[in-house]
Image (cartoon, rainbow, N blue to C red):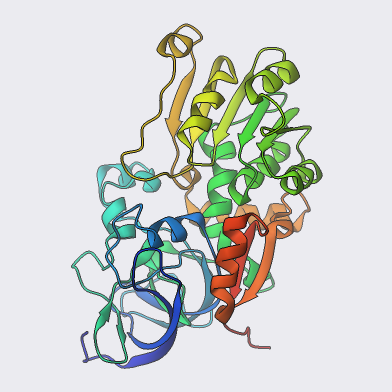
Amino acid sequence: MNQTFRCTEITAAVTRAQGAPFTLEKGRIRAPEGTEVLVRIVATGLCHTDLIVRDQYYPVPLPAVLGHEGAGIIEAVGPNVATLQTGDHVVLTFGSCGHCDLCAQGHVCYCQNFFGLNFGGADKDGKTAIEDMDGKPLHDHFFAQSSFATYAIATESNTVKVPKDAPLEMLGPLGCGIQTGAGAVMNSLKVGPGTAFASFGAGAVGLSSVMAAKAVGATTIIAVDVVASRLELAQELGATHVVNSREQDMVEAVRNITGGGVDFALETTGRAEVLAQAIECLGSLGTIGVIGAPKLGTKAEFDINNLLLLGRSIRGIVEGDSVPQIFIPQLIELNRQGRFPFDKLIKFYPFDKINEAVKDSESGVTLKAVLKIGDIPA
């Protein structure tokens, strides 16, 4: 670590081995450089991606500080930061380079450097910002933030200023999971009024898509899951129909509800067999977005002629095709208006109960766990 700059002592949840529990450890984080900001974390969402990286579905180097749905208050800014200042309330989102062809076209979710910037375990130069108390580096910059910690280094480009009267402690999940589900409906698929939509999986991402489908005026909204309590909540949040795929054939059920299949669908579970069935739930010219992330190398099978002859489409979706600086404030305003009640998904846990939050998330007891890490000044 570059000791030219003052370091701040932190507490971080560290992932030291594949599948191991998170351990809370003391460490140090350097001051921000260039266009970086140092954020005092108030709360951080726990996302499925944190867990699959812990389990090494994606090869992020360990030991690492994960966490990528951070919300907090800017403590310090680098010398080249132009749009943010100390004291700003912010949500942290994914990293992008800002200069590749796709970024230049506004497709920051598909940045040509996305994997390295978000899963590389260091900055673009291979340097980390966090060390343990023995002076050994901890891999960080996870989604350009590593917010399972009391402080995080982010960049100006992945830090979104939010109103100070918004409930900061619950806004972190807007930076990834909730943004992904809602954005898939609003930005990627462009679900419109009067259409039929289905979400395969009614976790936090799937239910965010249900709320978004209602907000944009879809008239048939189907939630498919195996957990009865999630399906009940889906109806409360806007689903017109629910299907428990343990009790019903999902393809037959969706076709019966719609009279032939949905216009739009999302696969949020990361299960290849669910994707194959979900494709069969599409109507003619229907489109399915793939969000759920399985292990690298996972393959799915489907009938090519059922895709070809019905004009169906399959597309991958990252982060809901969002431009976070625009989309996150829009979701906050929709929530204020009562049209996107994502707060109903959230359950708070103290930071030192992170492994309890993981257990509850994996069992389905909790939809969106949010770790409360720091206080908001009065």
